[in-house]
Each structure stands twice: as C-alpha cells, then as structure tokens.
Length: 544
Image 1 (tube, rainbow, N blue to C red):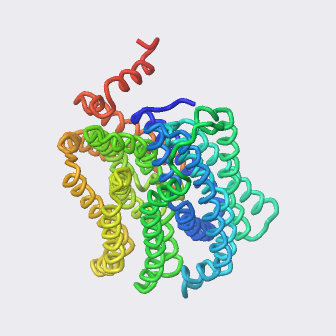
Image 2: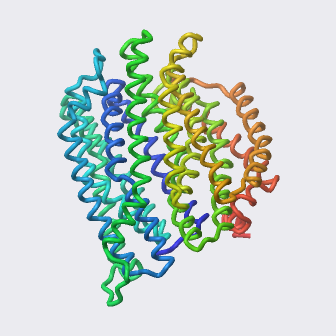
Image 3: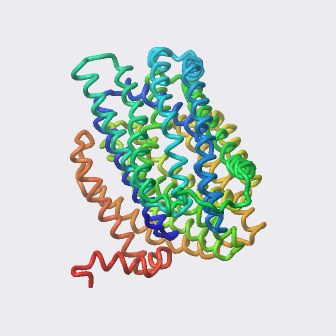
C-alpha cells in the first residue's frame, strides 16, 4: 500500500472525490427525468434526513480514529494502533445500530415534523416510507467510514479513494436501474421507486467495504493488523477515552450542523408558505437549495473534502512533534489550494448558472437563480471546513465549538428575517436563506483564523498576497466568460446545446485563468515546482 505526501494525498483524495461527485452530478440528469419534480422532492426529503442521521451515526469517529492512528504511528505505538482500530469498530457498531433504530422507528414523527401542515405535495406516509428505506444504510456506511479513517491515518489515501469511487458506481447503478425497472417495467408507485433509489447507498457501501477488507487482508503487516508479542503500555481504557475525547468535538459539531440543516429546511418550508408561495413553489425552492443546487456544487466542495482527508493526519503529525512552522506552512498551503482552485470555479459556474441548471434539470429561472447564488456558498464552506479541521488537529475543541455555534446561530437567527426582508424589497425570498448561510460561514471562519493567529502565531501574509494577485486573472476570466456568453448562441431547452455552450466557455475561460496564473508564477508557488514539472512533463510529447 503506497503512502502519500500532503500535496500528493490531497490531489489523490480530491481527484477521487471529484470523480465521485461528477458521477453524483451526472446521474441526476436521467434520474430527475425519470422521477420528475414529484419524485425529486420525495427523494430530497428522504436523502436529507438520512444525511443528518448518518452524520450523527458516524459522529466524528472516522476522523478521530484517523487522528489517533497518525499519532500512535508517529510515536511508534504499533500495538496500541491496532487495538485502537478494534475499539473504534466496536464503538461504531453500537452507535450505528442505535441510530438505525431511532430513524426506523421514529420515521413518521420525523416526516410529520418536516412537512408540518403543508398539503398538495408529498404526503407524510410517502416520506415515512422513504425515510425507513434510507435507514438501512446506517448499518453499513459508518463501518466503511471508520475503515477509511484507519487507512487515512496511515497516509494510505489511494485505496480509500478507490473505495469511494466503487461505492458511488454501485450506488448510482442501483438508483438508475432500480428506478427504471420500478417505473417503466413493473409500473409500481413512485414511493417504491424512490425507496429503491435511497437504498442504493446500502448497496454501494457493502461493495466498498468488501473491497477494503480484501485489500487490508493482503497488507496486514504494513497496517499493524498481525499478531505481535510486543504490547504497548497504553491500556484499552486509555485508548477508548482518547477516541471519545477526539471524537467529542466532531460529535458536537456534527449534531449542531444536523440540527441546523433540519431547521433550514423546515424554516424555508414554513416561511415561504407564509409569504404566499404555493406548495409547488415552496417545495421546489426548498429542495433546490437544500439538495439539487448543492449536488452540482459538490464538485467544488470536493476540493476541501479531499484536502481534509490528507490534512488532518499531516497536521496531527506536525503537532505531535511540536513543529509549528510545519503546521503553519501546511495550513496556509491548504487555504491557498482552495482559493486558487475554488474561486474561479465558483465565479464561472455562477455566470453559467442558466445553462448549467438546464443541463441537469431542464431550464427553470428560479432554479438557475438559486444555483447562481448557492454556488458562491461553496467557497466560504471550503475555507470554513479546512480551518476548523486544522483546529481539530490541534486539539482546539473549545475554539471549534465557539466559532461553529456562533456561525450556526447567526444563520438560524438571520434565516427568517432575511427571507422577509428580501420579500419586502421585491427580491426572491428564498435567496435570503442563502445569504444567511454565507454570513454564518464567514463569521465562523473569521473567528477561527483570529484564534489560530493569537494562540499559535499562525500568519497569513502569503495567503493574503495570493488573494490579491488572483484578482487580476479571475477578473480577466470573468470578462472572457461574459463576452463569450454574448457571442455563442444558446438554446436553453436543448441539453446538447447547453453542454456544448458550457464546455466551450469553460475550456476557454479555464485556459485563460491557467495561463495567466502560470505566467504570474502562482501555480508553481501553490502546487510546488516539482509537482508542476511532473505534470507538464506528462503533458508534453515524449515527456520532454
């Protein structure tokens, strides 16, 4: 099993996540065409509730385990490392079974709480059935997450990343094939087709676990899974306490985010209804913000997700050795990678929102408007995620609690007022919910940065300089995209036309951005000369 450096691990993890996210985006096109707005709303309710309970079910144990494995590996405690994995598996077994029972047994009250008195759309019975179908994945995915955490703690990113791709492939096959057979061959009601779709998560998880177990069984010695006569002085009780201690920050933050996501959805459903939108508009706007626009945004969020996979173990390694200069260098490198990649992606996708939305869901002015604004949330979310992951790695739990809770409370407090304010100003009220989310992320991110600077002397001069220098290439790219939009013809009712339109403009705009940043020396500065030279060699004929 090959181990990866920080930048290499980040690139591998990010590529795997980007591939899975692209698949996750592309399957939406045939899926949405098969189930329509009725089925898509039902799917969104079931999937979002499942995601909330999955977050609670995993409860930070995979990242906590990744952290403790890296720590023990750095200190040479091989026996303790092996026992930590066994203890982690036992903990996740109890937690996943408990959460499964809660979701399965209380599916109807959850559906009632979510939909409230909303009528004319999805029924409580339908939502209950689909939520129960999703609950079975909670018996599978947590084990998968913990196993990946163990591998990531060894900086073995490649195997874990391949398992993600396999999981997504089989999940999507189950969704598309299952829905097609249910609706077009057996002609059964929509709720059964959606139930099959959400059950795809269980199928994908099982395939990924089998793959990881096969790989791990072939590399037991390297992963310290073989029997050893040497026993470290660290007791199982100490290991268990440390796993819980490391997991508690993730648990609290996860629960806070899950509650926030649930409140976001319910507040939008209630508030938009009170503001006079009909049931179809309310369900469309709410699911567009909470599910469908975020599915397209996944490709941008994949950058931070992949980075965190590699960042936490390397930050923990540097922190264990008290190498603060290395911590500072890696943290700033993470911020710079996010900014140089995500900034142009967010702006470009926002400018092309009408055609991008049309490709996936068919042209809809409301959907395009939501996506144009929602995609910008991804940049702030990515910065927030990496900053707080660094704080986790440095055991700064109190700071994480404070910044996240303040950010989420800000979002909750501003959600309804912003929607009413936007309505009064004649602006689409659902856009107020997006602004509330952005405000919360910016506040949480800023508080975290201030603490890292105050307590550990981390400085961001180089990152701020990069941001200043990126203004020019980003503006030039935006101008090029706007000019091309004026020149290239577009038929929003044709998916092929939209694909060609987005493809041409994205390639030209992206090349303009890359050429300018390369000429300015920014690419080499962020990715490193050796990495850039390695890539350019492969792209050059005969490798010269």
